[in-house]
Structure formats: structure tokens, C-alpha cells
Image 1 (cartoon, rainbow, N blue to C red):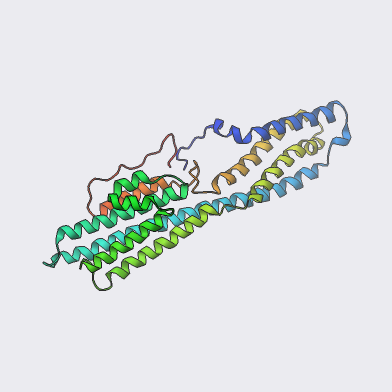
Image 2: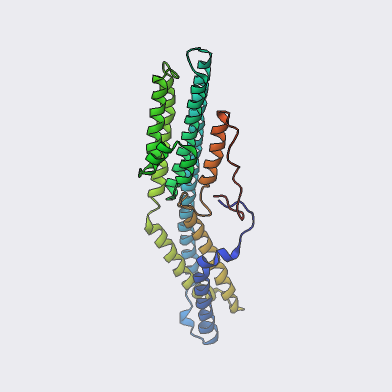
Length: 310
């Protein structure tokens, strides 16, 4: 996620250079052929540029809006995950903390169970973030889980799903040990069910991008418009026809940048500079979960790197 307010223009050059060159070449050709060589039949009606420009603007606006909706949906999914994770650990702490007054319950056992639930949930969040980005979650799992659990999870294809199963098993083991009673386990299972639903939504977002024809058609239409625009715009200029060259370059820059903004935000979990910073959000959530069970040693807050938060 981009945090800094200024942008490095050089980072955009690999995405816009072709249209800039195409605009400069087509506009120079239009100026030389129509104005200098007198080949007036190459001058297209200016209305053509207006109609095509309007159609292209609508298409790009639709693309950008669709991409932003996906980005916002991804952000909403992660917010739901955050809230449900906090609820799970908070309920686990509150229910079991009340049991400490029972002399038959060992306080150390209760506190260890509370910390295990918080650590396992933090591991689940990290593993989901890495799972969505196709990254390795081994460092976080080794840090937060017992060795036997970490080894079992690392062998799984869907690590978050296995961790959710382990969390459910831990809840029912707590019930069997007397740490939980009555309907306590069902309250926590409700939160786990909500987390599984949000995981499925996040996975759907990750593996089902916008249909490729949207990207292909947008790029081709921008190229075509950049090529045609100078020959239509020059017919509207009665003097200073050389202005068609900088005008075409600016128009190409505008449309290409709008198209790239949509393309760069349509996959919000792809570990790009414009995506939802789920790695940083997972670390922040780990801090919150450990704080809920009174763990003093927590990871440092994530900070932007060169203006980007990952």
C-alpha cells in the first residue's frame, strides 16, 4: 500500500512508455503529412475523437471502479477477519478467566491455554496472509506454534484451514479438561465459523481476478485511440497545428494512467505496492491478540519501507 504522498515518475515509465512513443509518433506523422505535405484526406473528422474519447473514458471508468470495488471488498474482508479474531481471543480469555475462582482449576493451565489460543490465532492470520500471497509462512508458524503443530501445518496445502481445525480441537480439549463448560465452546465455534467464511471470501478474491478480456480490451482501445486521436484532432486546428503533438502525448498519458490505475488495484492480495497491506495488518493483529492475553513481548509495529506498507 502506498503511504507516501509523492510518486516516483520513473516507476511508471515501464507501463506508459509505449503509448508515449505511439502518441509522439502518430501525432508527428499527422502534423507532417496533413500540415506540411498537404495530404488533407488523412485528416479525420474531429467528431471522431470526441465520440471515441467519450466511449473510452466510460470503459476506463468502469474498469477503474470495478477494480476499486474489489480492493475495497478485500479491505472489508480483512477488517471482518480482524474483528472476529479479536472476538475469539477476547471471549476465550473472559470465559476462562472467570474459572480461576474454582479451586479445582489450575491457574497455570488456564493461562497456558489462553496464550495457546492467542498464539494459534495469530499464526492463522499470518498463514492466511502468506497463503493469499503465495509466500512461505514457516517463520511465523515456527515462532508462534509448538514444534509439533508447526510441523503438521507446514505439511498442509491449505495451512489456514488446518490451523482452524487445530483451534477447534483446542477448544474442545479445553472443554474436556474443565477449562470450558456449558455453551462456552459454542460461543467460540461461532467466531471460528465466521473466520472460515471470511477465509473463503478472501480465497475467492485471490483466485478469481477480473476476466482477462477486460484488461486486453482496455489496453487495445487505449492504443487505438492514441493512434487515431492526432489525425482527428488536427482537423480542428486552423493554426498552430504543431500543438497536436504535445496534446496527443498528454491525452495518451492521461488515458494510459487511468487504465493502469485500474489494472494495478484489481488484485488486492497480489503483494504489489497498491494492494491491501495484509502482512502489516497481520502483524498489528498479532500484537492485539497477544495483548488481550497479557503477553508483554510482542512484535514491533510495522513501518513503511520507502513509503510503502506491505
